[in-house]
Image 1 (cartoon, rainbow, N blue to C red):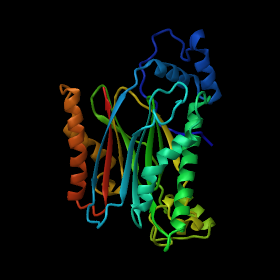
Image 2: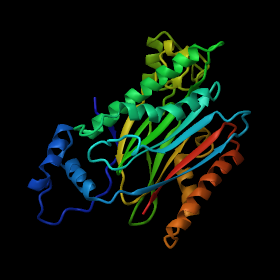
Image 3: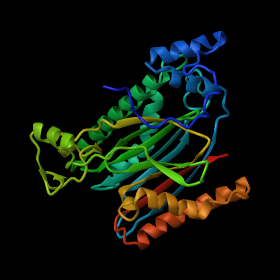
Length: 340
């Protein structure tokens, strides 16, 4: 089993003619090579790691828009926070640790609000301090542990209520460690990355997450092995997702809180990360959403302050347009702008 579902590495300039295809790091960087070997990375990835250390960390700016749609209540929640100060002493060789997440609640808003308040705090608790060896493995394990703890604590609180809470929520979160994204998700909220082709300035849309619904073969088999069933594309004919936080009444039917985790290094050609609940993607494809944002922000002559305002406006326009197109569900859009 792979450590991560790897996403495409950022494009790199071709090696000069006559240079070896797998360059060795200089003697002074042997520790970088040892860390790469310990994590099972190949020489190419090792070279990328070495290059990343010397590269300026890309600045980020988050923008969020929430719309109730036709629902009586906004059951979505989100988190935007810098974990660098909370996670002291910070992991060795990481100078920036940020967290962005969107939670799409169902059966009520309590699970989504609880996750928005506690998931990143539990991640901070689980992250080891100081020199942790292989950063990738440590962050993945910490994410898995944080999801497990958040789910257990919410279910304990939900069960203690009279009557017991039946809320649940999807989760899509992105942890940014310097210039590397670690994406963890449950359910059908999604994250995509806009990466520009430097030659023709056309966007490539990279999917950063994997949706979990009961119709998928592996998800359906797990549910059936646990004694549940899938009817009309839903667990027991009711629940649309096969993984979630909360949903205590479905845990015995194979609904789990184990996220898929992906890793994606950022590139200079990346423009923004879009996180959103399924309310947006019922009205837009990922490509349409990315192009909609770009239509409002593409202007090479704009100043940084102007671009920040453009992204903020594009975020709200995208949410408004989803509602205008008939998205009956709540719509939450979180755009993480990558400043250059």
